[in-house]
Image (cartoon, rainbow, N blue to C red; front, side, top):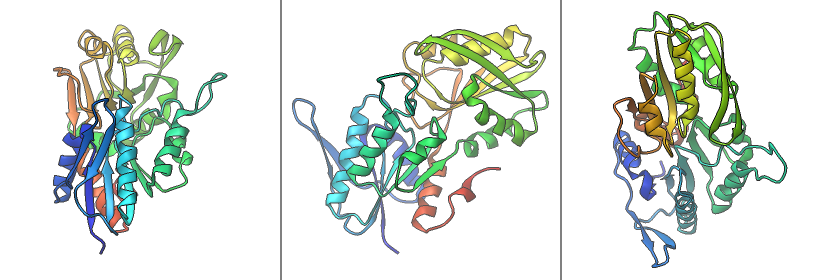
Length: 309
């Protein structure tokens, strides 16, 4: 079988090392040289000719992380790698997946085009902000789900008095999946915005009094929506509110919002490194899931066999 090699971008090395260790290999040797003006030149220090190459890098801010991934892909292609998979635990710019008003970009499609143009043969990612982004690619996309991470953790909790909630209408499908799996009820928080990252109003649809509520979302940016939903749910008589969220973007005043909210706990994955610590934020590792997915890809086995439910 063709040899497998894994390389990492600088900002995702904390996760890449855990993925490689879980797989049973060491990360390949690479480094990023920077010119005095900040221009990057990634260098791969091992032969990749004819091999299966997995390049691991989340494309969270700054956009330098995306640029580094593109340059790594190009370097591997020009070094005659046999098959290149871009492993992107967090796929940035995924929130702009359509034209919702005149004269705006469809950024997720542009990023897909750039990754393909750089030379990737396959994409592996987790919990895209919108499932249809898979269709922006003309190469295979392995779309992993964090349910495989969160469900075993939730099973350790007392769920006898639990219901699930979506913090907005757009996340109903995601929250319903958990409610269906655990055979629990679902409530919805209906919000509206006057501008990006700022919730103007919110209404809870459903009865939460006396219940332990689990909010479900794919990413947490400023935490404004999650915290507002948690506060409103508690004001309506809920016993407790915790949240599960795949990607901890946690920008701006996110940690202040979380620490000052009525959220009991925010459970996230390690697709993005935390900017600071909080007693309310618990991190679960995705390393084994990505390692297993990489192994199944290399051995031409099913990826969906790794999913829960």
